[in-house]
Image 1 (cartoon, rainbow, N blue to C red):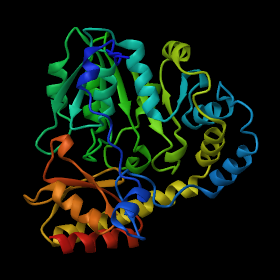
Image 2 (cartoon, rainbow, N blue to C red):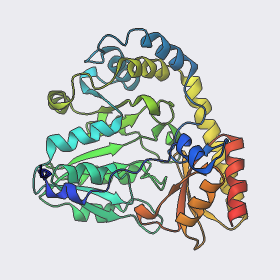
Image 3 (cartoon, rainbow, N blue to C red):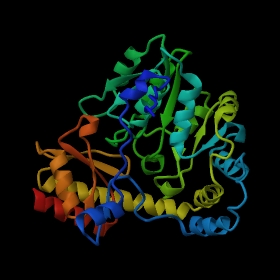
Length: 368
């Protein structure tokens, strides 16, 4: 029987490259024959999760024969109360990625455009092309920050969504409050700004760093997405949320899956949200270790891009990032090469525990 030929509805899908995740620890251990692996590739919380979240997860696991609450009532109310907004402004998702996908599915058609910086979170590109639309990529400036002036100039009558990751991934840089408010004020009414604040907890309180939810509460026409995958340590459970205008929430609820956030994830996220001590400990560890690692790298002649997130973009002084990545992999250290983001002479390294950062630095010194 001849093989059936499948053609995607949108030809742009054929141009997509599947999202490349960080190599799993088990795969590297198997390939390299190593017993000790340090994973610093996916911007996970090295402390794990809150004990309160773990206990809530265990309790919820006893009832996984039941469907989860499709309306995510408890978690939605906790998120809404935390931010001082009605729960009608909250959408929960299978990670904040799902919400980004739902927004493109809802708002984009053939011929429409999204606008985002490059390099930035690659899901903006993937979600746009998957729905047959065009992604307009505006290069970061020479300091690897969003060039908001150039982005403003790139908006056309076809632009439907502007994505801004704040802080940005993979650079860790951020847009300050004054710049962001000026940009929002200049947006035409047919354009929605999606402010992706996946790393918000790490950046909150830094000089000039804006709180997107506060801007929303002031009446700015924006969507703010956040996640439990980073500072909260729940990456494996896949749960995120967005704050957005209620009419948009109602439309999103018509197209999202009925049980898109599982019951274990809902329980763990609700408990994690209330464990402020754990979040503060994670943020303090991250800042202390980022400062220490940055200084050590600078001492050996390697520059880093100042980061407000939980990772460092390391410039390798002309060395090939892929070769350094492979050398680290041979030594049991997983990082992220950046050639696919147009930064071939860099690697991105998650800030780990002190002993993990020491292992990385020692391995890097051996390679260099």
